[in-house]
Image 1: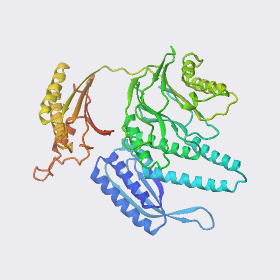
Image 2 (image 1 turned 180 degrees about the vertical axis):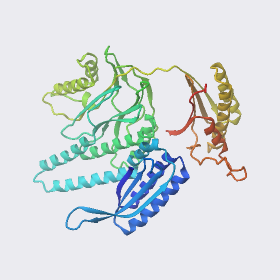
Image 3 (image 1 turned 120 degrees about the horizontal axis):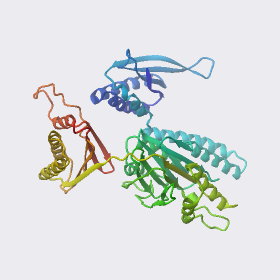
Length: 538
């Protein structure tokens, strides 16, 4: 058996969070929303009854992976009691539930990740726990003998929080060579960096700087870093991620703190880099061989946390083999020497062009040593943070043919969209059977969007894009209507007679049947539907 979840539950919020995660995990494993909702709700009700009888319970959820238990999910609940004569605890089984269903065994790892992603409530609880820890530390500060002792202790607490939240300095694979380093100032400045695998083919990277110093900056850094990473699990658009995180932070930002952020997602296979800059220092792309540098000067929105409702943009560019993405915080360019001179952007750019380095580590160390040498005897007033990422492989270049059209939310324009697609298909010798299928799909989805997607009488634009990559056909439909996932509803039971079926849903069922893959995403203020025919020649 593989354990999907094992945790002590002590509040109804814990149980509500578990119910939502179990529902999402079961949908991944079964693709059956009704079954998933029913089982998650039943478990939630049972756990709440047990929690009323016990102060806290241990819940364990496991799934079978061998031939005997492959289709079985087991849920065990344990009563927790102190062991006699010691500080340890004993766990007594009070309930064991199991049920059998056809599970997608190859999706078990994806289901496990659902339980690992923290909800906003869980993040708030983490913050409350850290606040409790800080309050305990601050209480200890009050008994310190003098003001200097109290200040030193507070700075140590803030710096400990800051450094404990950072990933390791190095990440290396056949495709990526990454090195990062943060040199904290005596007064914690709130700098942070992060890098993580978004999925098997994408790497996420973040460089950020929180306004203010000390413990509040360290706590805000921890929250921001966690929100960015958790959002990236299900969102591949840096613009959408920053838009979401900004709203989460801004709505409860009583301290009026803000964060500058540079965030990028690299498609390792193609070399495509998608990035967004929210008020941060510009990053650079360095050609390792020629030492030519490209300054990424785009600003895609204001600092994060200042105001709700801001929509951020993003830029895409292509990396070549051995290109280096170089990011840093203002502790580099705004460091000063004893004569109050700034290190400055021009000095950094000259170092990137002519400095002696042959790897991301030597580049990162070179920049930091250059800054420290420039400062001389002057105090380091801010954190110094540098991250270098080298793209070590040649991009996989696949020739593609792309065409797009924009129509308005007028049913009469559906015919125009279909004519455009047919012209594209005939020009590129797409089989007639595939043309017919895509025509049906376009007619069904555009009808739904135009008829039900808007709650006003204004004119709206709908963008349709088609991509042909070898024999793979991709259709993308984007609209700014109300959020709606057409693929969310329960599948139509076509085995029943027409009289027995519920009204609606047959058109979307037909779309699912005609296409090999389909996906819905809500990115910033747009609905994005992606449909794929994997092999038009089959």
